[in-house]
Length: 146
Ligand code: DQA
Image 1 (cartoon, protein in one colour):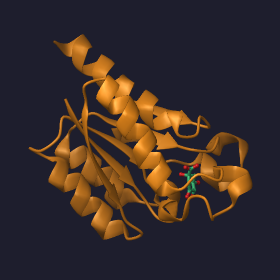
Image 2 (cartoon, helix red, strand yellow):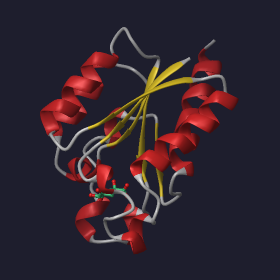
Image 3 (cartoon, protein in one colour):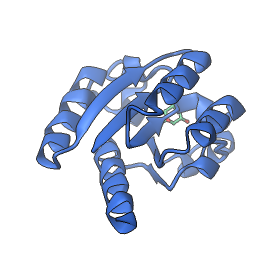
Image 4 (cartoon, protein in one colour):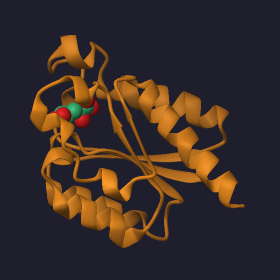
């Protein structure tokens, strides 16, 4: 199985940005962590990160025909982007919404997710493990359909 792991704005600043919320590990540490777990699960992963909404839409569209599923942390665009919701619906691939922090326990505006409607599941507040859980959800989803 091949999975696109897509990260939105400011996640390239992991380790520097608000370490009390997002931890001290970097974006590169995150990729390394996911890689280790994905190998053990026999899953191939491609990574994308952008600070720009349209680039994230492009990356989701690129998944069409190239990936079996998407793990996406749209970051702040989670709470604003109909374009990302529409892109996920357009490609029709199983997708999982992931957040490092527990978005439901923070400011009210973070409780709103536009992308959730197009996702088979949401994982929040589990740090780096959330991405691995997301991949496992995609695997279970595929196995259930076979
Ligand atoms: C985030 C939560 C969002 O509300 C925030 O805008 C982010 C990161 C998370 O991973 O916890 O940038 O998606």
